[in-house]
Image 1 (cartoon, rainbow, N blue to C red):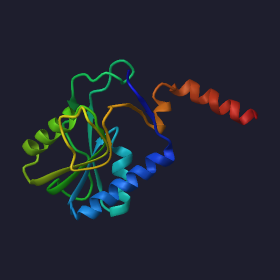
Image 2: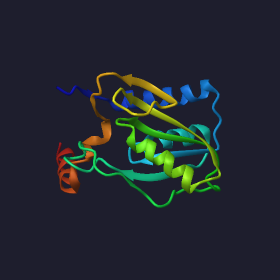
Image 3: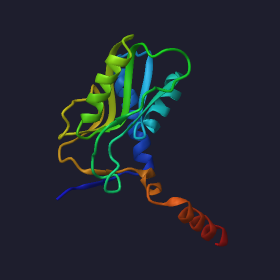
Length: 174
């Protein structure tokens, strides 16, 4: 039986802050913050704000089947979006979690081939699941029982625009 971990917005924000402090305490200095979209975008955004650095974004997708609960083939975007210079030097790769770890492993391989000016890649995540083939360099919570994580913004995954309109129409009437 799979355990489910439900995360509030407040706890989620606290985890991001803890992750930033973990990287800081380790003394790792990086030239680029690269987040994996979509899961790493909120994490990367906060890193970018705290460090006052541009955020690079690489879109990846593998959890598209069974309402996002089954990992399929990995798609990696052809380009990284970033302002403020090239992708080079020490890179901090941020995401929400390493689940199987396969995505991060393939992304790191991709980065080494496509961006030879990158000299070092470190991985920072909120959650590290025991089933992962990769141990991240920085993490906040190690999850030995590999729960399915329900993040606070996932309520939008199946909402659709009609449901959102209805929700707000009901709130206006109250």
